Amino acid sequence: MGFGTLFVGYFLLLNITNYLVSDAIAGVIMLLGLLKLKNVNRRFAFSYVVGIVFTAFGFGELAVFLIDMLKLSPAFVEGAVPYLALLRHLIVAALTVGLLGGMEEVSREVSLEKIPDRCRALSVSSFLVFGLWIVLEAPLPEWIPTPVFSVLFLLAIISLLVLIIAVLSTIYGCYMRICMPGEENGRVRKPSKFGFVNEYRERQAEKEREMEEYRIKRLRERKKGGRK
Image 1 (cartoon, one colour):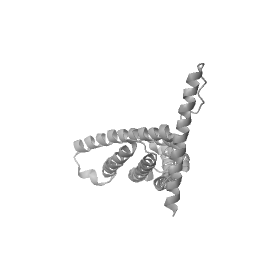
Image 2 (tube, one colour):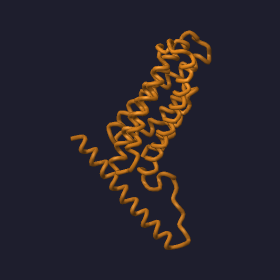
Image 3 (spheres, helix red, strand yellow):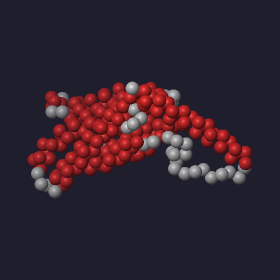
């Protein structure tokens, strides 16, 4: 359904030290997943648009990295990097909140437990974490004492890593519970030597197919209702 590809792309955001190189790759991979998810609800559609912006921005970051590596314009790189970091946090914050909103909506529609509440809590956390990063990256913190700034910066790094891992866990939860049966592992289970085991598996697979059909029907009905 796109959650698996989205997971891989978002996973690359864990590279918080050299993101000038990896953001373009992360953006392209996430776009491939969001291309399948954008028609599910408006929040995923919003995330897809932000994903396009993030991908374009990632290639811009890559260009700055190459300019720095080739020593073509040191002054330009020194002046651009702080503002790139500030803008990056704004874009990633919008992307993260959009993804969480999309997952909250779709998981609520298919009656999944816990995921909607988790998405809502992570959305609030995203504002706090990225808000802290934006404050630290802005020119304003020069008045903050160095020891305090160091503590805040360490807190920002840890909280960002925890947030990304939590969002990845949520994406994986949707991947496992919303995708079509068997899509999560990409292979067909081998038949058992025992007939009753195969019968049990067939009954379970039938129940899963019926549940998935019901979920898809609910999503389509909601999509049609939103167009009216």
